Image 1 (cartoon, one colour):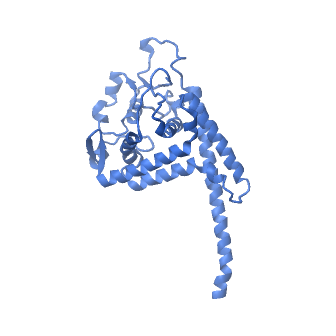
Image 2 (image 1 turned 180 degrees about the horizontal axis):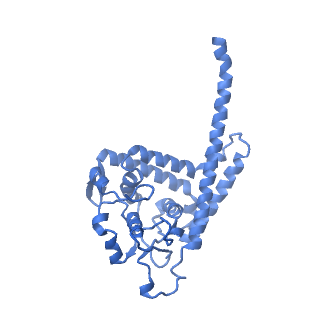
Length: 298
């Protein structure tokens, strides 16, 4: 029995190696698809979202019932990379190019600026429907579109801007709010899971470039790296955001992941969140939640 067990060890090692090799290939393939999707999404946003500078004058009665201006933001130097990552995620997950399409469920709300007709806002339920939703900007955009309002986005660098986070402390506090409620859905495990998936996909190019002795994997890593750089350069130019912090995306990714995990742990330990000096218990927030992580409404 001992000899048979001993003879089985090489086979176990071989199969373990093949399994790990296969997982590495699958992981790299997912990373390549992820960065390709980001590149395509960025191109569609740049081509489809009109600039305020290029928009012709339109009679007031012809304006859509909802106009949303989502400005690119220049933040403090210490968190430029994190802000660049946020801008990239808006382009990727927000599907801004599809917002004006009435057949699409894509919608946009910006915490910095929303211009809404009062009749459309009241038809959507107004403040009473929205008051306890943490992601109130996203929920408002989706609710307005759900109730028949038209939506549009415009790109307005040089016309309008806002400083969301002046320092890392402010960014950390802001992440506590959405990290625990919207992204984590009031659970630590989901916050951690989302963070791990996000950091794994975002850093896939560097993994594929490791000397793992897997044929063609370094070429996939190089392709991912070039696609990532091209995507980030496009976002930097379109958003008029500094190029070097934008290219330092691993830094922004790690900062975001750390803050998300911190938000999940704090939210669970506190039993709720603090926002602008007021404590909101988890039970109350769950009752008022209107939008889930995928963006759909209750």
